[in-house]
Length: 475
Ligand code: AMP
Ligand code: ZN
Image (cartoon, rainbow, N blue to C red; front, side, top):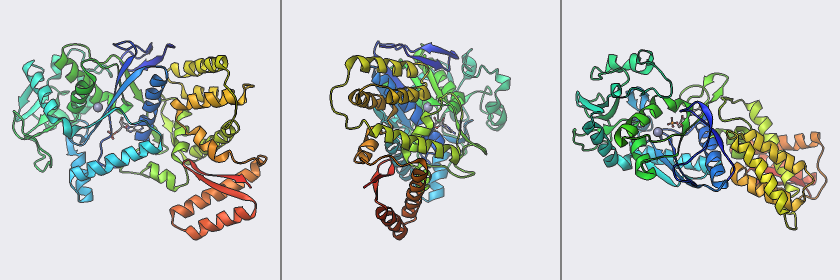
């Protein structure tokens, strides 16, 4: 198995990837808070985690990936203040918390399906693991890492000398706690302490509550990930993933809870995806244009255009989203599919030595801290190379197990075209018409969509609708 190097947020260096049991990866992913649609920033995180998951499998690891679904306890401020996001979402839509949890969980996995993101092996909603969370909190109380105050149970961060592992913050710099923690919640002994279990809170109207040794209540946000990860991943995880904003307080608190409960180190490798940003700054569900995958589709982009856009950049850099940038990715992706189409039906046997050598090059690109843009370069180099069509086809299929760009599916739809390629100008004109047709279809203006199809047909051009959007060929 080729060596894989990954940046590790814990050590802050690029380290060789290791696992507790050789060949087996227990990987945990913080899942979505299902109070609204995922925005495309959230989806960038899941998409890059998917590439990592797929790459590890492709490299021969036996991966067990676990994801929680946050359907209780995540407050509007990460510092245990504000409202439960789920409750706010339910109120907004005049529905119950469970109704919106189901709706947005389904919507999330529908986005994942379109983006060809592999479904984790275990998907566990937090509300399905409350007894496990209660046991964990009991364990923390027994061991002296937690205390009861004013009816709530808090984690006592003063018990851990290296609590601020990610930020290496000193407590006096701990903005989250300082701003709203002790000031507002006089029960906290230390600024950094966080809630494990709420009973006496100002959220009297919290919809979902459970019996616990401390009375009727509900869990804090962080405890679900420790409980779910330990339940399905055992006492030692190999890899933990999330967006960069999860580092603190969420992941810091997960480490504090899990290691204090287990009494030993828990997860040695942490993978964080940096943010997708817009010109306006942080991407948000509540201000500016709420960028969802469906919105992109309405504007004529396919999920694969967005996947390709994300793969072009490194996960450890923030990525600026703009429509011109996405346009570039869209045309590059369509050109790539067209190039793949020339080998999609290649006959004959692939050359085994060449396949092994190219796979090695592809593995080194991704093994270099998941360098997806380099992996795409390897793919382009392959397509330009003098390898036989059959070798290229076999390798495209293999690389696409990781890239998951639907390359051969798209190419198959195109491959019936035997006509000579169009020149750039003609291509751009036809693409503009296809985009207009996609917009017309979204707006249910089928007369216009049909008129565009007929116009192109009269010119001897056939439109083929594929899962990646419409493509065309000369008749
Ligand atoms: P949430 O649904 O708010 O719990 O977030 C789901 C995931 O998306 C978490 O792993 C976040 O860290 C991540 N995330 C939030 N905002 C962004 C963003 N702008 N870009 C990339 N990932 C994000
Ligand atoms: Zn988590």
